[in-house]
Image: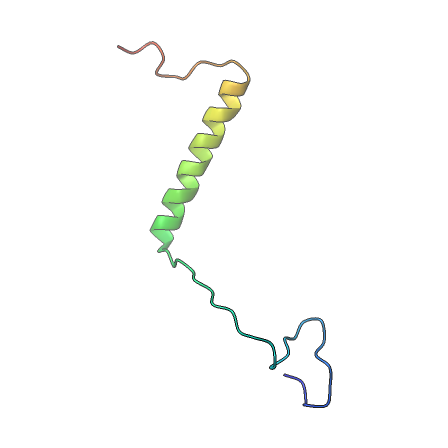
Length: 61
């Protein structure tokens, strides 16, 4: 924090500024891993689909 007669530096926030509300969702490591795993699977699926590779389960049924 800066003294009252100093300007704040780039990395400091002036105490006179209005405060903002920040909402964050805190996830467990297991939830984070699950989200990342899903994102990776979707990314790989989209990557292959963009190159014309059929899904691995296309011949089932």
